[in-house]
Length: 134
Image 1 (tube, rainbow, N blue to C red):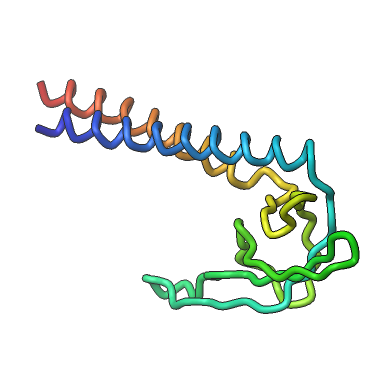
Image 2 (cartoon, rainbow, N blue to C red):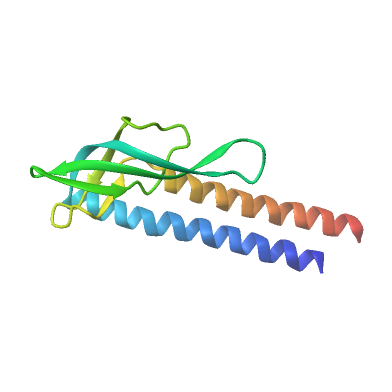
């Protein structure tokens, strides 16, 4: 039973990591090639209590940015836990649909890589622990 649990968790983590990397990279590549890089300003932050005693977790960061002289308001797709109102954030906005944007950074891809590495570690640990019992 334990062996299959490790395999299942590993497959899920690796699949989620690959999905995040592929989906976000595809969108980022599309918007970077046809869009415009702009600086957005964080206008508000909402937080929710964390599950442990470590404090609050940033839930959403609201940003404002301008494309072709028109102002847009949106929610940052990758909120930073240490961000504050007034911070500047680099984004790429779709020139045809400025409400569609991506962060200029690579946080989503890094999270995907972390999920893949975690999946591989779970598989290795599962293999070690299951074989150690047998």
